[in-house]
Length: 266
Image (cartoon, rainbow, N blue to C red; front, top):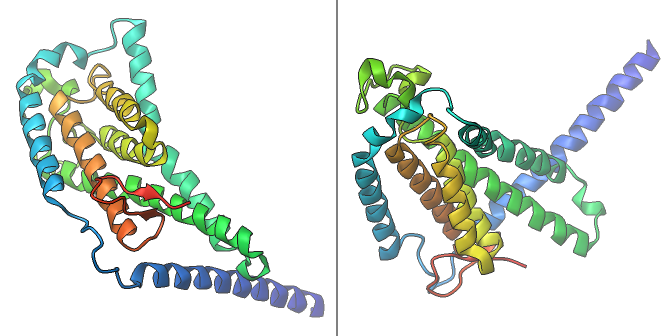
């Protein structure tokens, strides 16, 4: 009995230490994000951001004109090339990026920071912040998209023969009526901004690559062009807003003059 009691005490002490480390990390994070923003720091939202939103709306509306022309893709893939595109689009599932980020955040957040050297602590803090940004930049647009999907209720191409191209059944809560906007495309938009921030010298090739992957959802028969345009735009804009918000607090990023994209902190 005494051995069992001693083991239980050790387990409880272990959990208390882990909880204490996690709470300490949370306090550090809260302190970093609550610091006053230096005077003269560029705002999160700028006129350029407003024009980006306007452009996204225009592109989505223009893409909707061509939705009926992609009706043939609603059925099974007619060849191996299109089947390959359908398989490739699964790389845009948000879970592939959220889960690793959560694991890394948990590992670093529960470490004993007091036992680390200053250089190691700085490295862990950098990795923690970047993982947290990736988590937020992918998860927040994903949650937003899923809420919009339920409200809009846009029919997917697979049910085009029954309801038509422009059918909307709000609050149906079924997969066939969760087409607008595309969740995969929103993840692609978020990743486009993330890759542009991580690799500024290749930002436009990265943006183009992610846009092409998002467009692959059209021949995959899962979405219409307007669904993809809206999802990609939403993911990209929200990821950029989060990066700029963090840059104002010199967390993960720093502002780069009047540039739309902030810079990663070294």
